[in-house]
Amino acid sequence: MNKLLAAFILILIVHAPLARANKCVESVNDPLTTEDLVNQLLPALHRQAALSESIKWKSDFLKDRLVTDPQKARQISDSVFEVKQLQYEVAQAIKDMGGPQSPALWDAYFQRAYNTVAASSSSYLQTVALSISKLPSGKIIDFGSGPGNFSLAILLSSPYRTVHGIDMSPLAVQSATNMLTATVPQAKGRFHFQNGNLLEMPPNQLKGDGGVMNNVLYNMQTTREKVNLLKKVRSQLKPGARFVLNDPLPKGQNEAELKNWLASLAESATRNGSPLTEYDIAFLSEINRSQLTRGNIPFSTPKELINIAQQAGFVLVEGPLETYGGLVTSLVLEVP
Image (cartoon, rainbow, N blue to C red; front, side):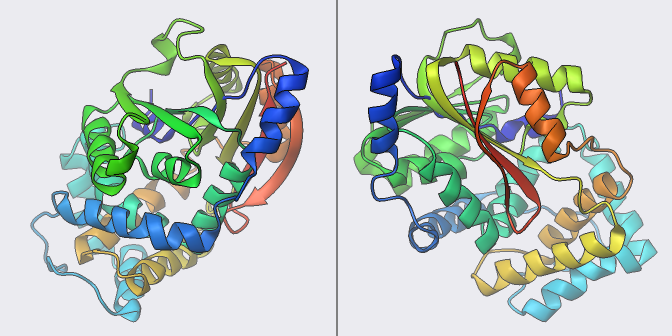
């Protein structure tokens, strides 16, 4: 299974129809706004990235220094597309890390680039806020919790939520635990992260109260694999559970479109004070360029995504919603 399964999140709802309706009303009390996320989430992510080991290799083009000029950030990102020698150099570094399927590579990606570049995007934060507004109070199970950024937002959103994260990467589990312990020490006892694989878990083990999966399903190569994964998700949710599914649209496979998007993200991260080095920007750009422009990722259209969810036994409640600046489809689903 692709290491990007490190990005799961689930949050579960309750039992009988009457209790279910009351619980849904509770879920939208004082919804977390994008401004709240900027003020509370970004500083924690920046601290975590700053503590992680820097991505670097022997380079003829890059220097191990923070990029503070947005134009410089765009220039480095553009160069990965335009300068073949640099493109080869970064691709070789990725190969030396074990290639796109390597757990070590994705640990580095999440710890450095993802936590700063993606989370510095206002459209990303809006997607997080929207997802949380659709969820109930109670036990929040974060499958594939990665470095813990989505889990932290869930925990910050309400004192009536707890978070249980599961991820295939031991490093990601430790990172998420460390970040939440440092950021919300007053929430001790309200969160827990474990190392594990959802596909190997027996059904009805987690028994949460609601759920979300954030940019994970697209890593499954076939429709059958995607349906099977969502069946595993459903088996961990209580009857009546509300589940938010976020999955990328088939966009960014055009090189010009992808190039502009990545450069914009790099600029945004720099403006938000993210601790990005020249190596971070080049690494992030090449990972996405090599995977997206070669058609290596089997994205689903909104219609296909709804069909997959229904085949897995979910009922569509709301959607498809276009989020993350038009790059992601979001569905609000329910376990019958």
